[in-house]
Length: 372
Image 1: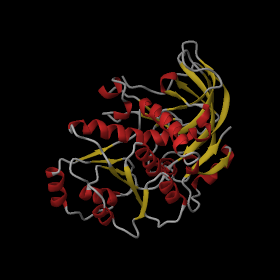
Image 2 (image 1 turned 135 degrees about the vertical axis):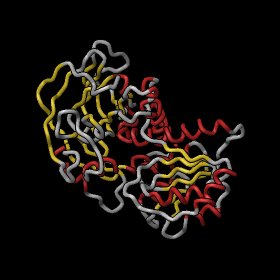
Image 3 (image 1 turned 45 degrees about the vertical axis):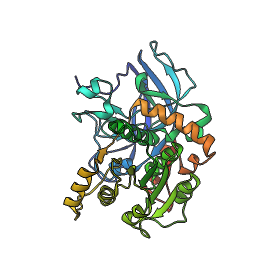
């Protein structure tokens, strides 16, 4: 059985949403969709904030994205902070007024999805909020099955919209640790993070909060805000324009863990060459285009083989990872007060400001839309 959109028992009029016509570049527009009422096992959520990420921009540029069946438009947005406004009769654990977010992916009928792991979907026939076959969160309110909803404490309300991107790196680290159960002595000390966008920066904060020595590399030379955030966490920032990945690896102890989050293929292949023995390289950002690379394939093969090294992909995240993100974001506020909030660099005033989503001011890290 393939799961479809959440069942909505009734609708009460229309509401605005920011949408695209999938497959048509730069078709961003305001649309109207039904305003739903919750069924017995559902939660109605007033959307407060929606984060904008590279995936949204790729959908706007028609790189991918699919509308719900029978519809021409797809409401975008998969990073959400909202407030519960009503719950179905069978819902326990959520009450009106509570802050919440929700996971992104919904299952198909594959074995992994049936086992409760849609983030590990095998058949790839899943649907995703704001991405594939389901309207997203960039609208006034949503109705969601309670099993996909995650509470957000009031003390992190100002950064709660960051839970979804943090959940992505939580999954990557959780998967790395599961993989490394193969090694009885696994105790990672040194990590390299490639990329200083929202995923790279939250990955840096996560690894630092776990006590690892971290070097974060990105293209732009310091000083700039992303470098400041890296340094404030106790990590080291290095520009790829000034120092190569290979040269920085030569300065460091063996790299136990690498997060690749640049959105480009070349750094990932460079990371394969410099990963430490028994180490794990986690690929956690999508790569566009079809660029051809010249790599030392035989050398990389031998190094991976002889060094018992692992390369793993990690995409999406589970409800467990969302809960970990909430807990860690709360801890970060104690470790580095105000630091996570610095990732939010731009706030758009309401859905009608949607045209500015595509703007990329110098130094922009995370844009959020203040919905209500």
